[in-house]
Length: 376
Image 1 (cartoon, rainbow, N blue to C red):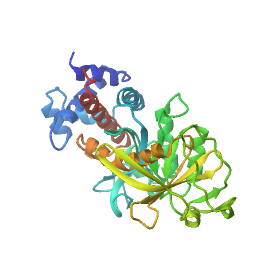
Image 2 (cartoon, rainbow, N blue to C red; image 1 turned 90 degrees about the horizontal axis):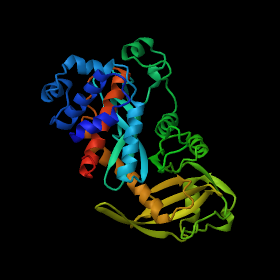
Image 3 (cartoon, rainbow, N blue to C red; image 1 turned 30 degrees about the vertical axis):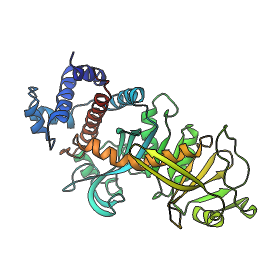
Image 4 (cartoon, rainbow, N blue to C red; image 1 turned 135 degrees about the horizontal axis):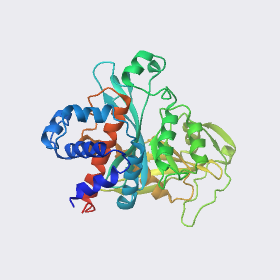
């Protein structure tokens, strides 16, 4: 059997109708084989599948198939084959013309540093030192779309999809991926330094027993106490601030300023072809449950980043590598998913956007498995 036939039979087995499975395979083959722009017309023509442009468009935008079982199956395959070390979440922009695509709005895009007309999404990628593969996503609904019944109806946005805080989308993605499990088998890594309600996010992740390492704002309020943490053999001892800092509470940058002259640990890391060296402070942010990681890049008089984590039993070098993997995941994801038409869905519906991204993720996963020699 053709490896791609076998892959499609497995990945799309949750689709109840044979015509849906055939359309999914035709679309996937188009994403994998058509060079350049992945238009529905170009894929329908190039794959010789017998599917018309209209039938593929209907399959994407109107056919009632659930992408969640497909995403979970992709996750299972990747965990078994790729040996991922983290699930990295980040904000991704989808630039658009006009105002009718689901959840499109003129809004600030942090990664671009400017305002643009776009859709914004929370995207979760399964990440290792070689690949960063999308496995889940949430389209962020702007406030302007909350009560605009006409726009919502045109884009077929479900009634329950309402504007909500960023961390709600992130938790929903984690719950979606975890399924029956309480947590993902790998740590969650991301940047929430632009968010306000991060304490609610930490609490929600800890209730789910989800390991995490999240970059935070220097203005985040933390508590410091010198109570010793439970540590595994080989784990680093926390750096020791002045005794006057014991029981202290304030902003991260204020705490770090108090202890900037205390002993820092130099850590070297290797991430694929990239390597580096920085100094770090490793401090208890909540006794027994959370740590604060602070980085000073080489030759820098000021810290360059702050992270909160519940990985209190991990070696400092391992936590640093996770932080670096998180920073590198975005470019790796863009390179992989961009090659398979990440931003080329031309439709306007909410379901169509999710369906397209699910099939892009299936193309990314197949490409990775093929590179690993696991598609035969």
